[in-house]
Image (cartoon, rainbow, N blue to C red; front, top):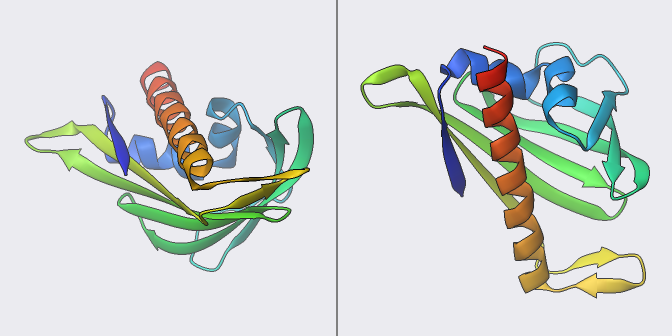
Amino acid sequence: MMSVVIDSDRQRVWRALTEPGEVVAWDRRVLAAVDEPGEPFAGQHIRWRYRLGSVQVVLHERQREITERERLSSTLSVGSLRFEQTYTLTEEPGDPTRTRLGMKIVATSQVPVIGEIVDRFGVRKLAAEHIDETLRSVKHWCIAHP
């Protein structure tokens, strides 16, 4: 799990993670919600138009566990690529105006891609890069749009 401290309260960070218009604004890979998902709930299926490299695909997100302003856990899939993604939000001790946003991705040790297999070290590297970019993007979005 990797995390970042954001100079915004948990409600603001939660909104950035769960409102489709905000997700599209801070995540350069997400182009639009295919359906209007509304408030998140466990079992919800959200389809996103998503940019995977230079190719547009549909990303399927299934909400597994939701504790408002504390935890958002989903299973995501694009074609044969599947992984679990979990966000955790905690208030920084003594400062309710700051949020520690954690993110964890769990993927299989091998991921099939066009024409080859990415091994566990490649998967780990891709996941770490994705988490780092996501956390930085959410942080910048929340600070720039309080």
